Length: 234
Image 1 (cartoon, rainbow, N blue to C red):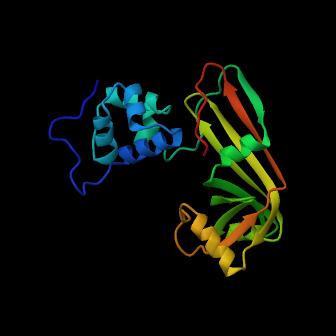
Image 2 (cartoon, helix red, strand yellow):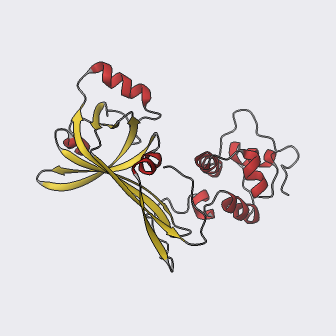
């Protein structure tokens, strides 16, 4: 079992490493406690806390165990795939495509995430990534008034959300189709802003809310026999 080295407790104000941030985020996505992940990785909870909260540089042996415990890869944890598109893994031998029901689709959408909205801009199709928030029956995102995603207002649009597991060549996708509207009521805009767990990843200047009222929600999952089923919602 890996234990935290003597004297290696995180110092006040010491910056976290990218590895630590990715490990902590992945653990939360799986709904696991530090103790549960530590048990899977044959490490102490204290050492896992050290890795998550400080600038630790663990060896490859621990990284391999941690990646296995978090159902991911060392490359994902260390940021080795950040410049690559998702889905670079080889196809599995005998995949199965399973349709997702409406409730399963909504569970995958979770409370928020990143999706891709398909719109028409200058008489041509375009797809833009957006940070979305689920607000009751609506799905909402923020954009700049004249930016591409704002073109959704007043039209029937599609929003696609997915998650891919390159390690096991499996994943899921959800497609939401419905009319989009620009939010013009200040109170409604404040309500959506209060609901949003995060601002747009693209930065400031995106204060125009667009809402989509789903008319149809469909989804599917690619399942590989013998591979673990990911519990990640988004």
